[in-house]
Image 1 (spheres, rainbow, N blue to C red):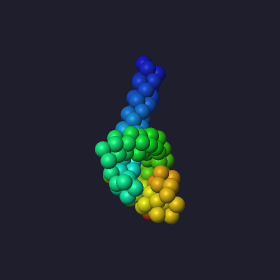
Image 2: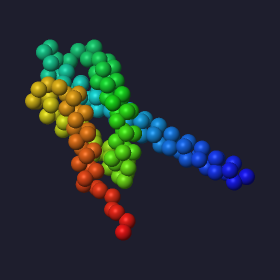
Image 3: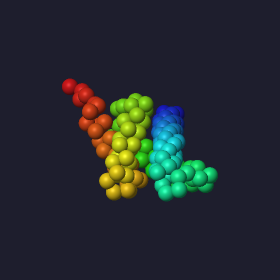
Image 4: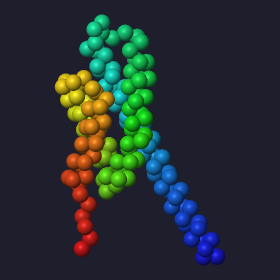
Length: 138
């Protein structure tokens, strides 16, 4: 009977971990899609010829698609790896600000917005890890 209980407890923990990873992936994909769409749309405002009706679906498809894929992969990895001790809100806010700063800086410097956004996300995650370092148990 004990073996059966331990097995059920192990399955429950795995199930809860899978649910947690799925939620982080979903939040990361959603935030990434919104940020990617918004950044590409803003970049298209300054393009020659301005905005057209095709720019909105283009922004959603390419900017949002790229942001969703990166967010779905990066959020669980960074969330469980570096930012486990932060609340979800703190992690989203901090990495979102880093992503935007990195994307804007890269656009101004060399035009590689997506690379700058990814680097800004990682830099913000590392800064948050250093800033909100978990306390050691004495």
